[in-house]
Image 1: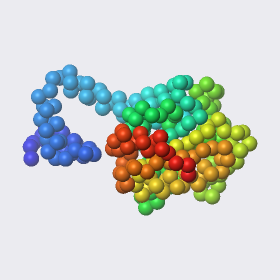
Image 2: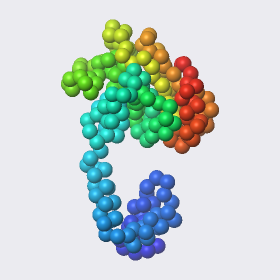
Image 3: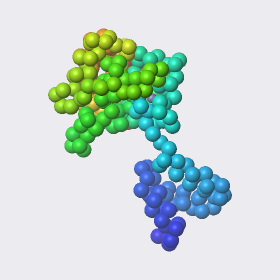
Image 4: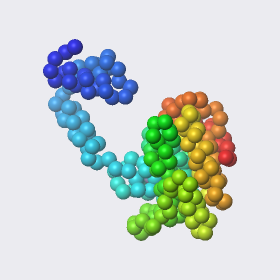
Length: 231
Ligand SMILES: [Zn+2]
């Protein structure tokens, strides 16, 4: 144990995910010897993260603007959506270099015991996107009176899509290969079954079970992506 500000700093770092007491100590000692400019930069980055981070109105990705750069990029296939649990999973898919569609970030996975149900996830916007009732970048920004999803009534949006015809032709479910991810994938596949012209696929096998998408190596993920299966 140390004293004063140094120990406070070690305590703070120890609370971060993936940082044990030894690493916390190492980082704190490193910062103690760091140049004032480096400390200022770190401090300002920490400040900005609290004030500046927002979520893309369309896909739920972390974004500096109203719409993230994947959604704003017109070279990307607008008709293809890859559904991931967290924004950091996008980086994993991007690293494969195999994907040129857009994304949808759920903000987690279904976990009934942990109190995470469909309404806690970013599913409503997903249905709006597929149903074609969510304003895209080129469209007017005002949101339409979209169908609500609640237990038992979550197919309203599906019915809306039937009338309109989908602009989105395929949805790839890329939730984590663990229990919650699988439950989420099954739920989404069932939900999306009512969009008749939509192809719903799931990343192919070869994904390590019980894992986290973020940590799957590029080759495995790339193979899982190209060999995705219809669900
Ligand atoms: Zn986006």
